[in-house]
Image (cartoon, rainbow over all chains, first blue to last red; front, side, top):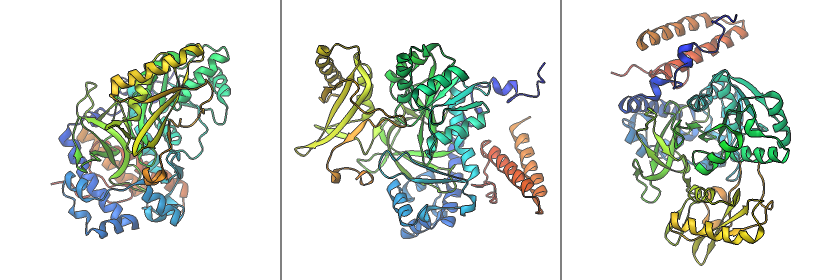
Length: 460
Length: 64
């Protein structure tokens, strides 16, 4: 008989629906008081230890002691952007003047995926990696994943912070880890059949790609050992309900997702209700900026997520522009008081286009496409600029089983559905199945063909 | 055990770990104890305590 002391967590802890009930349900006033104390400490820390923030504060005559309220922090601390950090890193590799710790405390070098251009170098100390990983655990736990589970990582690691942080979280949770490493898609499926993990971690589109390849191999993957799938890196089951349905049906599993910003944190683990993500308010402080007015956007309004991270003390990020469009909500039926982003990220400020006066967000279009029968998961949104106006063309692969003569009808149907839902008419074109690119890391949905001067500086 | 009692015990544990860290010559033991202190600092952080940004730094004065 097993010694009851030899277990990952006590029965009381195992029965908890929260990873940390105390903080996840903490009253707003208490959370805000904690944020103020932590933001003040962080402002002092960043000012004292990095040339970058000292210069930035000094340039406007700001002292850390001037921050006496959350509003002070939002309004007085200058906004920062990825392009500044990349510029400094290119000037003086590897980290420029952004480092707050001596190099001998940098335990792990990661990078962003490079989706929007040059990858950003991200240094972490050992304790930063522990804190960062913790954000994943809130999400794992909320979905029902426990230390008794076994987790399969279907990715090739590299320097991508998203993958490593998923691993840091799994280490903290204490479940059994299995790495797919450099296997190809078929190899991953064979490894899952052989090792019998209960959790699959990968990008959401790769989960669907694996399911499609499994079907080609004659494998009934819906009846495999996988009971949960967990995703990040691109809009997934929370942002796109159609994708949730496809992943859950294909794998016979419950799908979860978190919103992460590689250089900040796995900052918002999925809500167990599946309709949004909760900001991990122990690791980050966030507020929303209305890009049109430059003022703070309130609850229920669309705005750019501005984030300050507590977890990365090696390269601190204060009032950092995420370029993610979110709509925040204060209360949630799941019991968490942590700010909720409805539907996770709704779009990107850099990829948002205004078509005949209507703002069109990537995920809004993707959500409609997911509801049109006959449209496969392979599609791209092509941004162009014609006659002084932005335009978006949807190019999609029909389901392979769809007769070729039906393709135009499905394209018209998709265009009509987009028109009904978003009040804008987009050009929707069916392309030959198998002709759009396949991705194993992050799927590139947006093809921005607008002139360089019309794109955000980072992407030029 | 109340939250306050738990917090007091963790603070006490940090003091003991800090005392055990004094004196060099055993890098392995120092590394282990530093790691222990980092975890204890992190526990206080996640109990909503006002602690420093990093375990190595002095905690801020308690709020009035």
